[in-house]
Length: 451
Image 1 (cartoon, helix red, strand yellow):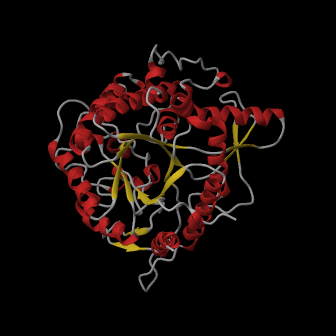
Image 2: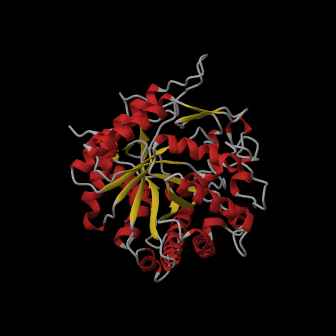
Image 3: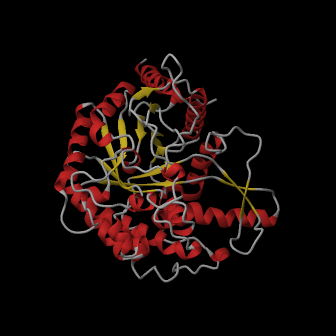
């Protein structure tokens, strides 16, 4: 049986965060409004009316947080750069004070022996761009490429690799189709141009980054899709969902074409948004790596109404996280092996860029935070990852979500994903039992290979 200690010698260990979820300081040093500032101010949009105005105050406490990372013995730190901090309106000149923060962050990470892995877009679009159409507007893709070039001009001499977009599927569906996330639009299938324009933005940004010598990745939320039964209707529904969730964003990047979305009544041009040359641009330069964010499989049944060609079904008989998500570690092995089978040599090296779980944890009277369910979750998923590697999947690293308890989007501060507990009143950081476990796992892996 595969064991996490058997992951190859140069396997990279890390943690992930996102700017709006931890930084705070939303009105400081010239930062512009983001769609999450505006969305979070809507009554009822976010649980308990929480906002990221302060969040974890990482903007002022990044040195403390890097010390926590150093204590884990990490190889890398995946974070995101807030576009409105760099370009307050999403276009035009650089806000130097905002970019200075990331300059200091990168230098301090390198001084701690931790490689920076920046994500250029983790959902905090400048509000001015949203008012001009957001990702429904083709121009946003060109603005994104301009922004990517500006950031790379400043940081590219010290950043070995970039992630362009985080979870374009979730941003399209939750932000533009269902209205659960910012910008809060409820367009259903009319949101599909936001998929294409994000991918176009990736392609344009990849060109800008490579011109400056950087390697390019993209990170998406991927899920193995399981039909609710062996029946034809459930199998067809599962295939339709797989095309939407997984293949809509991977096929253009790796195969140069969109999957068949006929089950949704959608033409290959995604509502007229795909123009001549777009797909060639998106797939022009092979990815240097694929970021995989995995949380759980998805079980799909035949549709029960006319709106969509599928219905999501419960996965029964498995534990649940505090968020209610099913815990299925082997789903990660299933996903990774399935990607290799589907894409073959077109599949680039993989990094697990997010994997973690929400746990109802709090400091005990003695100040400790015992989060055994998170330890069990991480252990199971790392062993499943090792099993995928043993089956021949090229996985280069694992970045758990997340270093800190943080602002969990529409759930506010109600869900805790961190290895480190954050008291959102005092902002005190308390490493949990899972922090010590992850530190010891990393050390044991290195000792194993050191002989």
